[in-house]
Image (cartoon, rainbow, N blue to C red):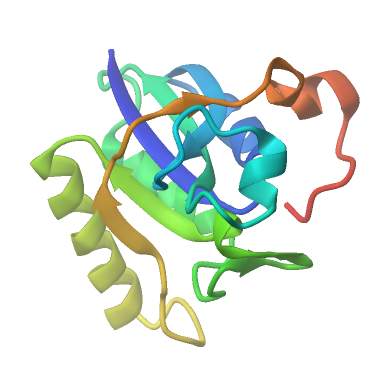
Length: 156
């Protein structure tokens, strides 16, 4: 089993997308990339913590590769929107790959170059590629939100 962390706007939709992929064993909505310990949803949404709404993905590399996760990530959101996804606005909705190992950093940067050089997006990719900071699980009511409630209240 291996882990990866991605931020692509509202974590409800991001988690739902990753959870459907063959080889993904578990997902968890949470917060990372900021400075406030044990942040709450309200604190993150108030823009004072520096955290992004993110999803930690546990996966079987024998069934799905990190590159395949990256392709899914770039396909599920608009990586050219700075600090937003659709109507969801704020740095906590930023596009980011939080790498857990040097190999993940290299793969993410290579994917950004490949997508940029291939002209896959009409505007520059603004996805942040940065070392993972401490992980803070989101409140229980955010976990598997779409699975429990359907597609409500989120741009993705």
